[in-house]
Image (tube, rainbow, N blue to C red):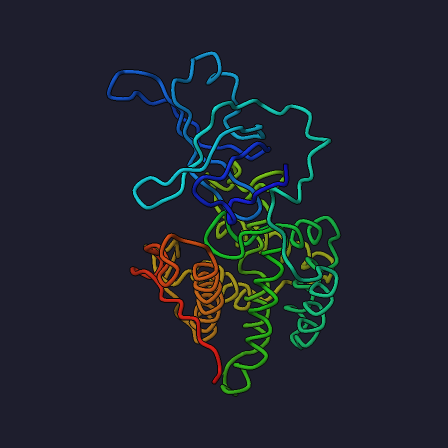
Length: 324
């Protein structure tokens, strides 16, 4: 049987294939019978999964997060598709699985993106900033993680290579935008955009599904990035035999701490320099645009409108416009 991706599922489809399962919970029906509710996912999306009349033994054998083989059917419930499983069997040997079916990857070439990233950052003229940026670029272990990590668990660029793709997009935007404002410190903007999300390489785990690490939950990428920049600056001070400029370090740290814009969105402080404000705006521009594009590309029961999107406080319209 050919695999049916979550995004291609339609009511009535018969399913007999592996999925990633997460968020399993036991529930009780009105007749007091046990049932499973969980999320099944693959590289194309995720779908609510239900299994009626489940036993505690079957439930306890299912992984909290992992691979399962599902046999069942796709049904529509209150306007949304759900996968109703007849059997759920844990998969312990993942060697036979094609992980490309389950983890979404960037459609762009990672080495090409990494090379362009370096090219843009090579324009930084400030010696301290250039040395700091290069300390990350020359760290092979860090750049391997940076090139593979998603930019988020689910919000935007939530795929392998997403962090690199998102960061490069920001740098490309800055190359266009910064010349419009000659008084802006372009070196600081470039460095800030490259470094603003570096903490996500430790905040998120992405071996077989996207999740937050303990470090990510307890510390978070904003604090991690700020800490790493301080540590690298201290190492550079020793190597160069002179202190890293503290005023420069302070305004760069401020960009990292404020790039989410508002405290309710996770910012530690409000942006208080022109460069910090610009980094926040460019970051938000790319993130929101990608979220909108992802939303209108995802299938729903209504082909004209998306589901309600919290990030935009509305559903999004997706007309089919053709040239006459």
